[in-house]
Length: 428
Ligand code: EPZ
Image 1 (spheres, rainbow, N blue to C red):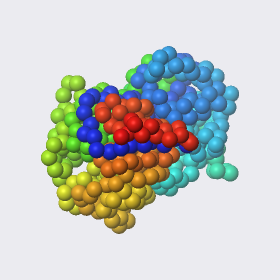
Image 2: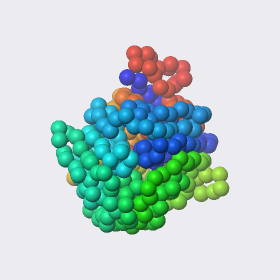
Image 3: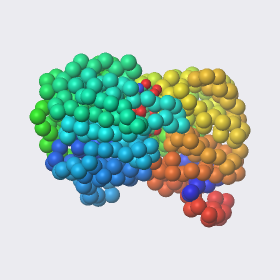
């Protein structure tokens, strides 16, 4: 397994371009199942998760080709399978998002339930309840969801929690249902809005995406379309945190500042200078970092996917910070690894107390999910000596060319193939 080797101590400087949104892409790829016509997607990030989603869609009968580095043509002209197998769903839970569109297109779907993951149980009960409300007959057998519906019928659906995935699955089922559907307490994330924009380009009738109530008027069929995926706000926030933690001066380009309002506000609270301008978001930090209180919330609150990165940053703030993770029940594993590097973090249930500043020392560390991995990369950027991050495949799932992007900003970071040694010269 490849590893990342980082020698900390460099203040990052320069400009970095973020890639397209992983999470918007994964949902929109599944939406291709809703039509037999081609979908052209632009600004698609080259990620392991995108490859996994394309592998699944190919198994179902879709065909795709890369038109350029980040432009993709995808067409589910005919489907020769209705089953999303366990071996793929277990590697990437977003595969579960084929349930709604597959059912709407073919009247049946057999999708493995994703099971839990490192950050929590991550049930899919809200997905299933919503699709049942649309008239599907669903049985849970042998770890699979077996769903049938000759034609789905619009319904009024209330989500107990504003689940991103449940909102997406239900939305993709509802767009071809008979009649109208209201999804109440819907997730409001930019990725939901981007999915709705792609579906609308395909002929769907959707209002209210990005608000708590999404209204859908079902249509008989959807047609092909062209869509440009929004920028990845989590990659953008990660790069902004990298500038802040190293005391650098970085302009993050190709971002939508509106998607990052909570992140911009929280970084500013730490004393980091954040300037939104026409050519991106500039992040500068010269003085001391101040401690903050942070609570992860559904959008537009502070995103849970940037919690690990903020924890790494706050180990360098002078004082005590409090982080409250409200979305997932087990998303503090990175705290243990940061502590091994010298951070002073106490975990009490869903709250982490971070005292700083602490001098972090490089160490061999390992991550458990892709955002925890990024938190450890940020710590490595300021730690003395060398940090070696194992299981880089987690990073490959959600960050395109991360080592190249950070090295272009001056970071001494190298991706080392399994079994090889770091070229000490580059890292000295
Ligand atoms: C999406 O996951 C993202 N993944 C996650 O990003 C992100 O952290 C999460 O939304 C929250 O923003 C993709 O978009 C592929 P949820 P999702 O359903 O849809 C509970 C990353 O690193 N819940 O909004 O699975 C659930 O347990 C990933 O890119 C139910 O109880 O998140 C959790 O506590 C990590 N029942 C909360 O809702 C359900 O049926 C939010 O989960 C569904 C969810």
